[in-house]
Structure formats: structure tokens, C-alpha cells
Length: 548
Ligand SMILES: C[S@@+](CC[C@H](N)C(=O)[O-])C[C@H]1O[C@@H](n2cnc3c(N)ncnc32)[C@H](O)[C@@H]1O
Image (cartoon, rainbow, N blue to C red; front, top):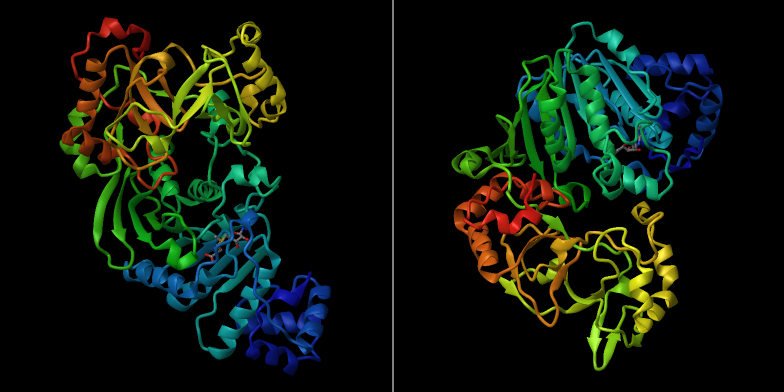
């Protein structure tokens, strides 16, 4: 172990310097008496090494690591959280911090909860456990009379940790599972080739295309939160985790299926930028174990206690603002049309084109001529700001009219387009997504009859705004890229009628009552398919696009 990076305080250094003659066994006994920590040194080698280091003691700052989703909670915040819980009369005897880091939650809990008998902390980065051990030692050297629970600290991977040994100790005692689990997703970890993943890495059970396109993406923090609820929700006690708002939404959403015996859900929003320097929406999520299952969470501002909304289940429907939702519930249903996602090609450098005098320019800066046959104007999320649009900034080559179609035949009649695509074929073969595996060369996705309808009502999946844009044809029918959703129409009047219905104030309020603005993608196909459109459009005319 490299101890050179641990921040060890002066009183702790002095303690070791004063006791430099003690043996490994003796020092562990004294340290247990002073600090409550069982086996402060697990290995004699560590003891020898650290004693040596401390004779020339230095300090370090720990590095934050993407792989470990490492955002240590500052002690001011951990203290506020513990004070809040204590004011709610939460007074645990047993505390579990499953990914304790430097242990500020443990330090604050020890100072706040006077009934604590046992503390269990687990952490994968060894340097943090040393940091915590010395912080605890310092605290108890300064406060010898303070309550001294037995403290068990494990340098371990939480995904493989055997929590059974803790469960055996609980036997009816008041438990608090507290912490701030890693802020990183399985997708990021996979891209880093990291092994810091649970074995069941597809625990969302996303299948086929959903697994490929991101529905199997999850936060490691969500996995750990659910693991804790799985293990401990039947015990007496509470759960208090700082987690991303998207994770809280998922916990409440999945509660319908999980039916954990948990209740009194509270979501206290924090300023993650201020507390962690992280541009995410996060909150303190609190709930009570061993209760009749509940399915809604009350939202507050953590700093002012101001009440906000209530999110969760209303019968079989999920809402972000239940009060508002109940006013517009009659608009909830199944959309008669199928919302479609736009074209996916994953080859912007070659496929995103600008029209220039007499030809086109690609993102590589190359200028060339192409036949017009496969050229279509294409809109991106950022183009969908106005009420209507009929002029594209970009063009693309539509190599297929439906998914999987052979591309050779059409290209054989278009020599310039064929030559251009062939010249850049390595850009296509380097596409990472496995959806392209085994498909014809230059394949695209998100394409079908619906793509070529002249009028469309569209919305961006990237932004939070809920107004819908009318898309009209220009020199070509306009297509949308895969960040947008749309319904296609044959005539302007029908498209306008649907756009008006979607943009009226009642519908807008309804959409906002069940959309989650802090999600990475606030507008999704699932959300759009919940909008029941009552506008009278002759359904037979649209049988090609009717849903269900
Ligand atoms: C967001 S930080 C929070 C640390 C601490 N809970 C706090 O509130 O300050 C997440 C912690 O999880 C630890 N961690 C990441 N992966 C882990 C794993 N597989 N097992 C145990 N700890 C892990 C990181 O090293 C980091 O200390």
C-alpha cells in the first residue's frame, strides 16, 4: 500500500510518535480503545510501513477518479444531512455506509447519533480508508469522552461484499443506511474498459435494440441503492442517500414492480454544482424501512425546506407533478399515431452535408458533386425552435428507403454518389454501434415510409421545451435526425390540426405534469405515446402510421 497520499492530521502523527515502541498487537488494542476501530491495522506490514511514513509525515490530496464515480461529500453537507435526520427523530444504533470514501458521513453520524453501537463502512480505494481511520483517530484523541461505537471498515468492492455478516448483527436494532454512491454509469465504465461493475451488468434487463441504444444504461449508484433496499428494507430503520434525481425517479418508478416495504419518501434537492462541482441534478433521498409500501415522493428544497411537488404513481400512471397531473389526467392515454425517431447514420463527417454552389461540402471540408436522387434536407434538434420550419441548414444522403434494404442496386445508377460513399467507406465500417453489424454497406436506421411524408409535427428529444414544430417541405421533403421525434402527414391541414392540439396550453401543462426535466432525455417516445390526441383526422388515411 502506498501511504504517501493520505491526509493525516498532526494529533494522529503525534499519537504514533508517542507510541513508537508498541507492538502490532498492542497498537491495535490501544487504537480500538481510543477510536472503536476493530483491527485498525489488518496486516503487520501496513503497521510497520505507516509508522515509518509517520516519522516523516506528509499529506496528500486524493485524486478524483471517473472510474469510481468519485465525488466526496464535504463535511458541512454530511453534517446538515445528519442533523436533518436527527431532527426527524432518526436515531440509529447501526450505521452502514456502503461506499464510504473518506468517510465524512461516518464522521458526522458519529458526532450526531448518540445511540450508535456499530458502524460499517466499505470502500474500494484503500487510501480513503486510511484517511478515514486517521480522521476517526484524530476525532477521538480530541474527544476521548465521545460515544465510541464499534467501527468496522473494509477495503472491499461493494459489488462482492458479503452483507450477510452485517445482517446477522442487526436483530431488530435501528438501522441507518447512509451515503453517496458512485456517480458513474455502466456505459461510461464500459468505454473505459473498467471492471468496476456489478456482475449483473444488464440488471435493467434491456433486450435487443433497447440494450444497444441505451435503455440498458444505468447509474452504478442506482444499482447500489437498489441492492441496499433489497438487503435491508425489511429491517427497522431508514435509508438516506445522496443520488442523482434520475436515480430517485427510477427508484420510485421501479417501486411499483419491486414493492419494497418502504415509505415516507422524501426528495430534498441540493445544489450539486456548489457541493460537488458537478453539473447534475441531485438530491438527498430518504425513506423509512419496514413499512407498508408507498409509491410517491415529496420534493423539497434541502436548504430552505420549501415544499415543491410530489412525484410518483397515480393508480397506474407515473407523474412528475401529481397535483398538476390530476387536473389533466383525462388527456392521458395512448396516442393513436406512432411517434417515430429520425434518421440514425452515426457518420456525421461524411453524411452531414452543406449545399454550396454547384455541389456539396462535408464536415471534412471536402467539396464534391452528387446526383440529387438520394439527397434530402435534414433537421436536427437545434432546428426545432420555431413554430414552423421549411428550410434546412443541412442535407444528407438517404441510402435506403427502409431498414436493411440492399444499397448496391440504387447506387449502381448513381455513379457520383457511389464514388463518394466508396471513397469514405472506412467511416461507415468504423461505426461502433452493433446495429450496423451484418447490414448492407452504408446502412442507415430510423427510416421507413413515414420518413418521406411531406408534413411533419416534430419535437426535439434533447431539449426540455415542450412546444411542437411544424415541418414543411422545401426543395426536398425534410427529414429529421435521431435526436428528434415526429409524426408524418400527407397534408398541411392535418399536420396543423395536430400541432395546434399539442401546443394548446392545457396539453402543454399535461405534458409538463409527467415529464422529468432533469432526465438526460426529457422527451422520449414513451412520453409522447402517452398523449392521447382527440383531433378529428380521418384515421383510415393514416392506417400506415396508426399505433397498436
Ligand atoms: C460519490 S463518492 C462518495 C464517497 C462517500 N460516500 C461520501 O459521501 O463522501 C463514491 C465512492 O464510492 C467508491 N466506490 C466506487 N466504486 C466502488 C466499489 N465497487 N466498491 C466500493 N466503493 C466504491 C469511490 O471510491 C468513492 O469513494
